[in-house]
Image (cartoon, rainbow, N blue to C red):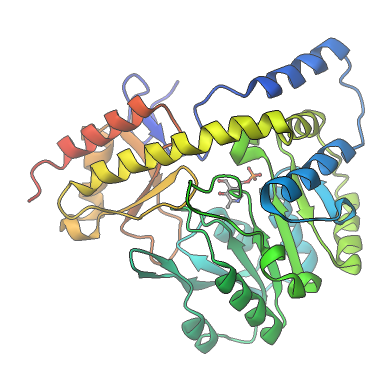
Length: 370
Ligand SMILES: Cc1ncc(COP(=O)(O)O)c(C=O)c1O
């Protein structure tokens, strides 16, 4: 293994890429075993198993009675976002994103030759809120789509039904395509409840596209499978045609793992996982909050902790040097857009002992602060 961010793999703790350190659920291991036993990895075209399972899961776990015919498989969400932008917007069109947000929203938009229209989130009561007044005031008329992370990466803010409805009304008023990336949907901490966009604002179905996957929940991002739900028939047809043009067929491993994950046994695994992550979040946020000037954002879901170093009085260069060289931690740095400049994102989807060690190293690395 190589050093990353100057931190040696010997005693460094990797806290950046958004997947977890846990062993795969037994139900997934058995699915892979089943594939091994069949010993046939030839052409494969049907994603029906994964789609049926995903529709079952959405209804069972999230109260969203989605028609499986509305769903189409892609090779992950990144793939879906790139293809959606290419299919439903034109070069030069603006895509509204609420920053700071998952860096790939910006990258995908720019890679496609579209223009990022940032709408910075505002912090109220410690957590992020969309600022619809500022967004409305800053419209250029070139906006074509809105892309949200729901729940939000980083920090796992769960948008309320009212907020999602407000967003739906905003899209209606300005004739915008609404793309809701709900990849973190299963990771709401106890006491918090995520609502699918289509449950909150069914009236916006004709302009909405929802992205889901089992990948974050079950740590199977490497199997590249996601579902794109498009309720409106014409848009769905257009998207499927785009997939055809690109010769994109479902991935055998992704379909098998998704179908195995979205089952009652998968649900049991998630029910054990989520309280553990919530416990990690508490340990991590309580621990780093003891460092003078360091402000962790309260988390409502996910394993992506979000920590503000603005009030430490240190430059970000100094903060990073301490985090890399002294604490030997590798968080995600930069790329989240406006409002994220003084934050680092720490992945806490790991053993509790790792989280405790990371906290203790951070406390040591900043022990001179008063
Ligand atoms: C909001 C969001 N969307 C998409 C992805 C990536 O999805 P995929 O691996 O399917 O491309 C991530 C990964 O962190 C994410 O946080």
